[in-house]
Length: 329
Image: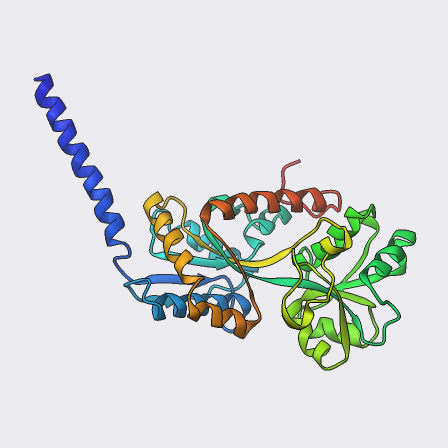
């Protein structure tokens, strides 16, 4: 009797293993829905479209894609939607660092551990920008003024909390400045922020590199620092990074890919292998060049570790400022 039971158990185990292998081999088995946590035409939508076209044109995925935009609530609608698709591998979700930031500031209870991180796809970098005729010649000069008198410089950003804000606070705090004394004015992102700079309302802004290039090329503004870990190639190669100034700070303004919680390790492995091929493809590289993005691919394991580290860094900075309202005391 025991022998029969053992034989039955082995047979069932074999069937289950075969079933798992079959599921992995069959994935995907239907249309994959890509959910950018933003509106059509926005940055997250552009990444979702580039992802879709690269996977399709390079014939890396056998099934079709459908893009479903879910903007609003600072990305929380999309995050909740994906969280509720637990175990379903046929959903992908494109988001920024709001994936953990919104939990810290208290707009949602969900964070990056409530979905499945798959990959960091690309990044933009952040810059300090001044008017072309500004007497401020360098980021070091700005930092020196703030260290001597924190009220002497008002920085402009599009939103707060944000990476734009971190690109001000992190280098200053690293240089011994009290983050609570740094003056930051929040304007609307993009064009309105640049208008405030060019109009002389703030002497320095922190914004995305792509949002500053038009005015820089037009001779109206200058970039005095970039958040990249290494010098940016091309015409901005001479712009100093924080690290080149001896400040151990690098900030990636990335876009990442996530799936619902509870998907199998086989599906995660499928995306690790597929996306590693995609980011090396000509189609993807052309999208990076077109949108002035930078390669910053990280697979699922590396991405999870970096999300944890980034989240901790935000908590350490935002808590003393009274902005970490979503964390239990």
